Image (cartoon, rainbow, N blue to C red; front, side, top):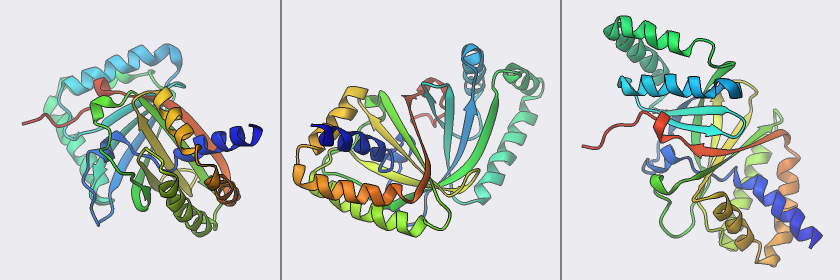
Length: 259
């Protein structure tokens, strides 16, 4: 029982690496790289309601580009928007400048509404890694079915990226053999702080549904020994991990309206 519990906890940590964000889930699989501009905004608990009110006001004004929003239990907010390449960053800022200029005095009100509502923010660019991703049989969750989000951040030691990725290619095969019921996609930070970094997000119907899926995978004990071996190799390449849980925030998202 003790060994099984230890493996279960380890799998909970690794689920985040093979993960799927709601925004990426809505995008068709393509051969060319999929890039995402990502903003992480950290809020003090007492300022959350004021920050969210400011975000909702900005969304109501019709921003010039889309984003998908999430929040965590420790008051981190994530905003993702797809871009074609690094040049897309310049396009985002250009669209925002033109939009703010068009709004005139309203733009000053928007900026003022955010004043002192957050501690800091970080910006980065991530790429979807289909080669490290896993897709089981069966339909994916629909955005409206998502009620729980699980993030896993793995900070890999510099120079060990190749070894880390080779290990996860083997884990991907094991996941298929074990019949893991949920889909998962791996993302790699291409621009930002504390690189190298790989990030995953598991989107589930509920927290209970998430852990039930892991329990189901653990029913096949013959894969357990291989999991332990590969997980040991993977974590030997990692200098730090972070795990966060939270929810999708459609009320703070700015998504294209259905035609």
